[in-house]
Image (tube, rainbow, N blue to C red; front, side):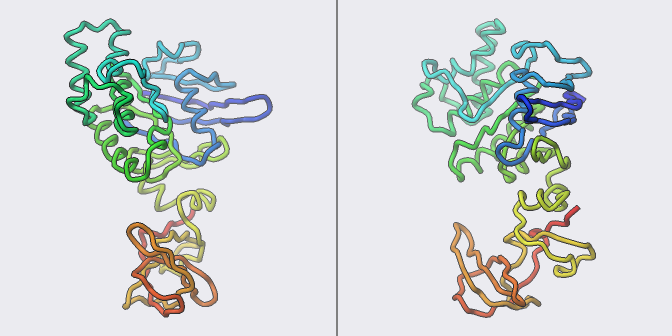
Length: 317
């Protein structure tokens, strides 16, 4: 294993921001720390970086304890929400910064910068001022700068959250490709499950300072460990498994679990509708209970038939 966190606890007075967290990240693996604001995920990432000192526990790299090793000697790359670029430098100047600190020769430095700009989709941007770039372009520069010195671990703290939804979705796809092409070991903090599942090989769900579930994205999405985790992952209704034809005690339904279909076996009455960007979300009354569903534009009061889409169903526990 490359990174090993062993029983990390971080306290501020009597408050425990992180409680007894253990986690490993293998060489070349991307792990996402996913959870709501205030759950301790950024504090944990800052502890890995050396910006926070754990109250107890240890951070190790290839079995070497990093206690007492300062930030700049850990050889970790950092990317924050706002990128923290140098406004007085060009794009190339920003990307080359870490290479200059490592005293890489000019020719090799310039070659590395151009290669990274091509990798992040900014070929031809070397001489531009970073103040002339869009938010998405600035984050690409920040990623290239962090990757330039070939860090053994890349730490990303909500790297896309300042961008609008459409740009965030596209950059998440691009970032996932970039991390895999560069074979980068990375730990990513995010509160957005779409982003985490796009980027990560494994997802670690955090709640109130603890890691409550770790697994591949598909496993975490389909089988959240408890109701609280299922709610965080989009489930808004909990019913017996028999409701959807599954032999399990309880399942959670996301908004996409029920879809309007003329051949569906479930029948209900539309009581509310909301038009979203790419679908219509309905509230349907079934046997006195209200359920979310998706389908074509319908009128309030219409009777509709529904089918189960198991991709929108989560098995609890």
